Length: 161
Image: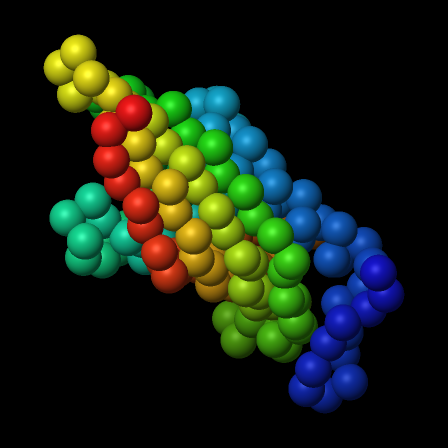
């Protein structure tokens, strides 16, 4: 894929796009395989994540360490969750330099699908969800990282296995 961009003629290079795809894919992989030491480094120190909470409302987490702890507690907590996350068909664009650092920034929307399974007593529950990740990225010390994520779910099916 070639460069993509908007605004003042600046564009994401093929290398930028590949690096953003890679950090997005790495985050999903290390989350599903519960490699918590590798999860945090996919994000900026000041990352903000807005997700769908189990109660149906929104849950916001700020900061790399807090986000890693929250995801770890969700997937590896009292009732461990097996998860499979997929991200598809990204729409990525250059959004200009960061006002504080001057480093490039980008935004993207990814179609997503996830499946989760966990035990409740001697039975297994399941969740199958569809929606979109809305993300912002910032290049820090030459590496593209996730600076913001909002999960918007379109549909969620739950039930017993």
